[in-house]
Image (cartoon, rainbow, N blue to C red; front, side):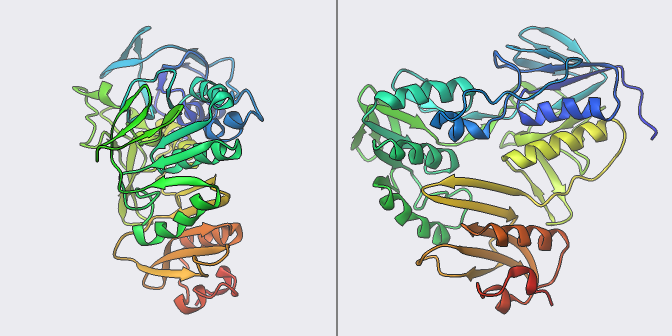
Length: 395
């Protein structure tokens, strides 16, 4: 392998993407200086358990293993990027290779206080877990993935739970409204009060103030209103963020100029598989893109083109999504969403499957992922039949 001469690599970001990039560099044989900067006070840890096992109290630590020969700078917030150095709150770090993996920052309506919580860090999860033990009511702002997982945990503790969202359906950023409507009864099944079409314009000492003039009183308020790429520190550098804050990269995740690569929540890349530029904010992409960015920084030049995949356990159901769909794709229901699970929603371009949303149906999710990756043409009529296994519908 003809690798460029690299003497000092800096990885900015202590999440899974940054951790995976750093450990991959060592696994691939890079033996130069390697520094990982994280703005948190602790070394890298796994984040999906924050709204699951850590919040439930079944685990207390989700630390990720890090090699002793990786220099980790905790409490180091990136401030500015130069062509050959990163300026941070702990000093200036020169580099001749860089991986940017600073993740996302939460959308806030109010600063965290004893009554207002967010869930982005381990300390957030531990603080919320303790608060839930003494609360009797919780208002969750945002019916997205994290908001629903928090609401599920609060309902399991027999608290009065209200979920508030400005959209007309839950998971509005991820699913078409007509499909997301089938999830609405799940909230009632857990005695959760779901308020849709209800914008929030503030939080006070009593709870949530609604834009319509009403309010929801609660002991605790949890903000789950989404997140934005943490890329403001790149302004004025050679890696200008797009209007939505994402970093535009090429097919190898190079974000240049120079030997600069990006990974995780912040990166948007061109996918040949889907014919679109994609940006994904989930665990598997963080790990895969961190690995790809590291390998390509070392000179491999491998295109990054995975089948996106994510999952969530919420409201008594497992939701899995694979692929990437567009409004113009042919939409097919597999099973009856108004009945009992399992069921799935499929999106096609011609006979080619582009995406699948699977409810309590892991086998269909596994089949869909392989069929999408292999571009296998399917019989749409047979694929819609839940009594026929999806991988048996190939033409």
